[in-house]
Image 1 (cartoon, rainbow, N blue to C red):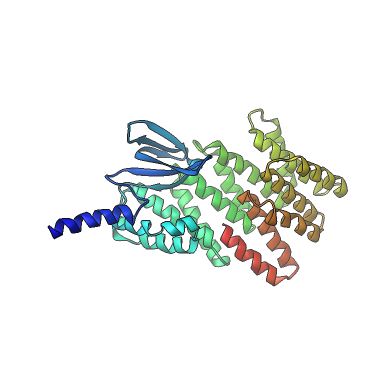
Image 2 (cartoon, rainbow, N blue to C red):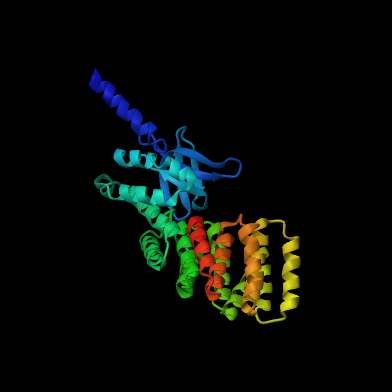
Length: 345
């Protein structure tokens, strides 16, 4: 009798301690939800590719979840030992404690049971490890190692739902470190990748314009802006961003006062915090291109302090601030924003 009670207790432990895992081979996909933040879809995964995940629910209804909406996946055929260990990481997931998560996922990745687990389980663990290394990278060596881990994952898994997430993170890391040719290659591949949701492609297009601006390849930037402007199928959100980039490209070597006025007017009219953030970042870029780093600093600080809701624009502003403080030999602020950037990734 005690043996059966013990087995039952173990089953409860697997389901309870590993609360994020599922019972009886069920998969669970945690997805973005506009009303509640996140929601879960439980059932059996039928298909996975760069476009997303198709799940057959417990009642037989199928649901297609775009990869852009996928937050996490708990595979029902995850080895029990790995499921227990991942369940213990739930508080760290909620707190976004990336160092603790990285340590936990690396330990799970090393489990013998995981090494012989189904391909999608191993792929997911590998993705989380590579992504978390990117989030926690501190210093040149760790950043390079994180870039390599993400690049290896992207190359090995081009048709996985994790691919666009990993490619976007890789491109951002490359751009942050000034590896503009590599970042351009990464975002061009993401922009052209089949099946990838429009959200990722739009971000890739905007990132390519931004990279052209940062690398002072203004001709390439103008060509990309013109291509979007002429495209009748370009998303409205992208066209709104293009208008700001256009002003920035015009002002990089043009009439500074006139450009500043136009960008400030565009910022004032914008109702979306993300557009305001982009506006201040573009304004900072124009000041920086015109050799006015102090004015650029104040523009980027507006994004850091006030309009930091858009994670991509916030990361961009902090990266620019680090560059300015390095040039000013302000080591205290360089360290401050380097640590802040690492926490925000």
